[in-house]
Length: 136
Image (cartoon, rainbow, N blue to C red; front, side, top):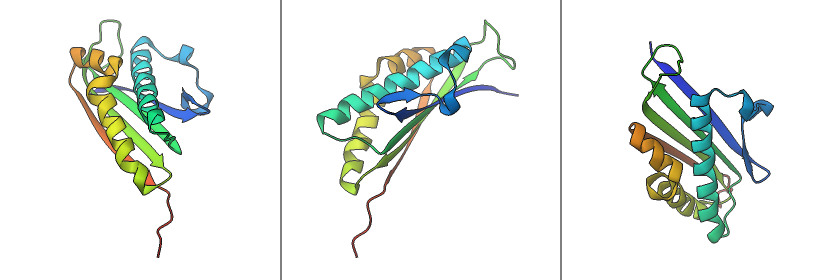
């Protein structure tokens, strides 16, 4: 049985927060690493988008890590990571720039993603939708 730790943060009022009023202080140390990575990626993406004057309607980042032990222990190590990006844009025109910002953060701009890549392989997926009404 795999032990998967998972943390999701969402952009609310300019800050990345845990869901349901959860507090960072309640996370175990392994989950803290995941949370910090999600937040770092989020702020990196927002910094890139700010240069293009784009603010997504929503941005949610989930980082999950698979541990090498069945139970969480101090000596547990991450074997792999998966980062999922879910973004809602205001228009179709924004989708390409948002996609590029996520890609740039994932591949080279986010220092914590670069750091966890040293610990274990990192894969990712991106889901971007637009809420723009189609013109008929």
